[in-house]
Length: 447
RNA sequence: GCCGCAUUCGUCUAGAGGCCCAGGACACCGCCCUCUCAAGGCGGAGAUCACCGGUUCGAAUCCGGUAUGCGGUACCA
Image (spheres, rainbow, N blue to C red):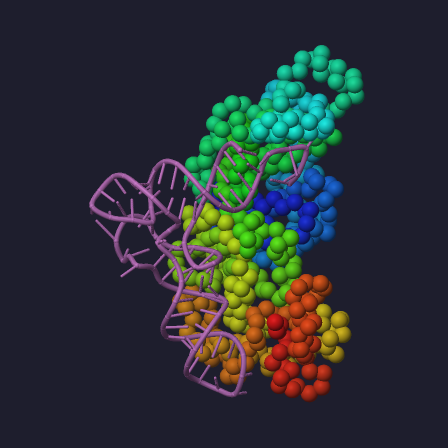
């Protein structure tokens, strides 16, 4: 085991997002390739929006992808494991409190009595004067007497970190040297709210230091935040980790991928019948390449080949067509029993929805499988192929699309489900007799 | 506005000074295979390497500027 320690730190305020999954994957690949440690830490300090249901969705999704972690909570709501826990931030509050007290005592941070109204007024004033937003520094040099006066008024203070003058530079693992003048950081920033709860910039740094994270690999949207983090590491007297900022995954219009414009929840892709191998393969190749012309790669092969030097710098548009193609590649080279196993939940959903009368037997399904695997037999796969099943079938009659799923999704309301319900082929498992037309549309989705 | 990052076929990418009048894959088109549709095979179309200068015998690759895009700029994460 090397000293390399990386983490994925999702916030359970929504279902597992494609971008989080990709960041998790890259951290995992980096850790496994270098014989390091990969951990999961839940950033659940946003108590209002966090929920156990989302925690479950996220952890289940990471398990589904086949990523394993060495430290952290394995099951939603359950205890975590590892030598640097706890791995849920809400269980680490005393640690943040102690660190805050330390910064305050050293005058590296100070109490700020500004009200949200004060701040809002400042912001508007600067905007009117065409100046960039920045904290006024009003509370930075309060005398003890002034502080006491505010306290007497009953005001509760937030804690602000003093941003020193100077240029912060670091060597990004992906982008190379980055330099940012602290004058552009917007002034002293809040690290603890007036209600006593710590803020993101503060907790990540404390936890990454405490958990001995060696490389912080995260989305590019954090690049501009990095100087704040470095300042905090220094103030806390902790060693700085290396930073690597991954390119963003984009909507078709090239803006940051969002729920509004794209299907972002991993769970929706699972429900649509995408297989983990394809998702992992696709995500790995979004923003990274082997440097060769290999395209179809297992998680193990990805671990073996992963190298940050080949990570792309520019954002990448999420291309569903390519995902579907990879899905077909993986389904076709899957052993029959595996396909049957993975089909089961979809069949059960169909049965529950009343679209089929019974679950077909394994033998019945098996009889249909040559239909999808036949193409594998007549082809010489590229050198990267893992397909060992030449001559697997004789009846070439695969389905149109490469999603492993029954004609409707266990999750209702996805666009795919709506597409399906209008299809003449939906619900095509033969209720009596095995008519050929019917069998050829089942159990895969037609579009 | 300010700061930062980026810019190779529609999309994902290869490319680290001559191997590139730019290669692969998805999508698209055509042909072949075929009882239909796929899958597969073969082929095609698709990129003045954002633009302008510079360095060099030689630049997609190095340097500078411009443009455009994106990200950040919270008592969100």
